[in-house]
Image 1 (cartoon, one colour):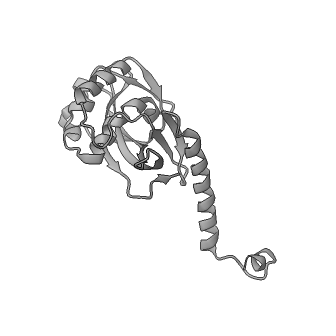
Image 2: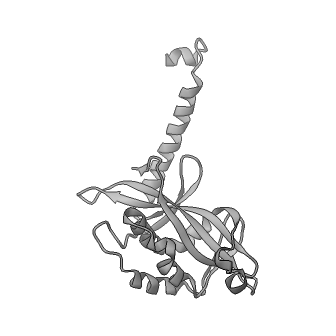
Image 3: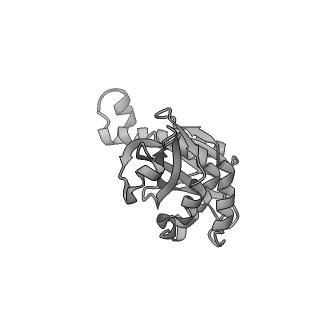
Length: 210
């Protein structure tokens, strides 16, 4: 069959060509995963060309209880820093309110199981998650916070990250991919501040596998 394709006697079905192209992309992803699996944080592109942050610095595994007090203390170390969104070249600053909102928001309180652990483990990759954020959209002014916290409006972005899954021998099997919505407020000082990461959700598509 392949010889007939090569000699022009038969035409390769379009779906086969698409499958082959997709397989090449998956092989490229596998090479990226192999290269970054020993690094704490890295950014790769998936088969659709979309960015995803791979987080290997896992603080809270499946059997470990999340200590949100420690997480809030850890996030306070980011205050005063800023990171640039690659897609829009916007600078996003980390303000005083981010650690408290991240830990105590209604959205966080509603999280359970894998989604809760995912939010806990994303704390080491805040900068990278800001960097790959896409799809900027204006966000509704819930609870009328514009005047108090966002004189120039609220905005939301999409971002994604991967959490590793290991077998019983500690070998990396795959990455489960999670999507998140990044909320940013534009304050009276003209700067944009990270407010929270919400709607953490495991994607249903096939995870990245080694």
